Length: 456
Image 1: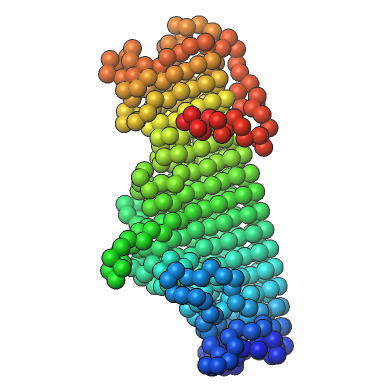
Image 2: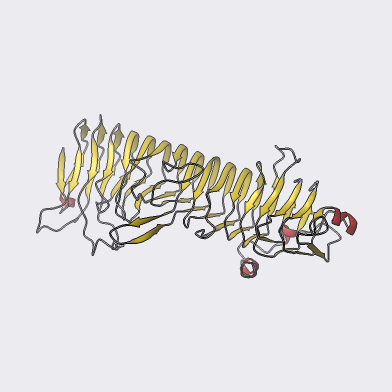
C-alpha cells in the first residue's frame, strides 16, 4: 500500500500504475503533528485498481468544532483521472475525511463508501457498472455526499450496516443517466420505517430508467444530549426524465419538488405519512404518463401539469391545490369504479378532471372548506363530485359537460343524497367547455399561483 500524509500533496503524483489486491492500494492519512493539513491535491492518472484493492482518504481535515460541524468548503481532494477500478473499494474513512474526485474513469463491480460530508466522493464524466454503495454510521446531522456529474450509473444498489445508525446521505445527480438501480433504505416496509437519518436526492438534467428511490426522514433521541434530532429527507427533480420505477417518501419532514420534468410508468407514494411533520409536495410543469400518486399529506401544490393515472385515485391531503392542470384516466384501464382525485382538502382552479367514474371525492375527515373555480368536469360516468365531508364545496363558473341544471345535479353526490353531508354549491355554471388550463398565463408567470396558494 502507498500512503501519503495529507500535506504538500501537489508535490507528488502517480501515473500509469497498477494496484492489485487483496492488500490496500492507495491511502491518504492525517499529517503528523506540526505539519500543515490538507495542502495541495494528489493527482493520480491512468492508474488501474483491481483484485480487491482500495482507494481511501482516511485523514481528517480541520474544522472549527465537532458540533455543529463547520460548513466551510471541503479540503483539497484525492483526484483520479482516467482510472480503471475493478472489484475494488473507494472509501472516505470517516465523516471528516478528505474528499475524493474521480474524473473520466470506469468502475466495475466496485464498492463505494461515501462517508465524508463536505466533499464526499464525486464522479465526473465517468461510467459505473455493478456498484454497491456502502452506507455506515456518520457523524450526527452531517450528511455524507455522493455526487455524479455527466456520468452513467448502472446496476447500483445501496447497502446498510444496521438499522440503528443515524445514516444521512445526500445524492446529487447532474446531467447523468441512472439505469436499473435500487436506492432503497434497508429495513423499510409498508408498515414502518426502521432506522434513523435522512436520505435525499437532487436530480438535475438527468435521465432515470428502471430505478427505485426511497426518500427518508426520521427523528432520533440522543441520550447524551437528552433531545430529539430531526433528519429531513427530500427529493428535488428538475428538467429530468424518469421512466419505469418507484419513489417512496417516508415521514418526519420529508418533502418533494418536481418541476419541468417527465414521468412515465412511475409510482410515487408517501408511506406512513405524517400530516404534522410533512413539508409538502410541489409539482410544477410536469407531465406524468401511466402513473400512480399517493400523496395524502398537507400542502400539495400541483400547477401547470398533466397527470394521467394508471392506478387512480390521485390522493391528496388537506390545504392542497390544483392549478392550471389536467387530471385524467389512462386509457389502459377501464373507467368503471375509478376515482380521479381523493382528498381531505383541495382547491381547484383553471383545471380539468376527466374520464373517471367519480371525478373528485372529498373525504369525510376533511378539516376545511373547498372551492372549485373555472374548471372542467368532463366524461366522468357516475359523479363529477362526491362530497362525503360535512362542509360545503363552493363550485363557481365551472363546465359540467352540460348546460342543464338537472343533469348537473345528477352528477353530484352531497347533502341532497344524505342529510349528514355537506353540499356542492354550484353557481354561474358555464354554458360551454372552458379553456381552463389552456387559458392560464405563461408558466413563468406565477402571480395567479401565488395568490391562489395564499387563499388555499
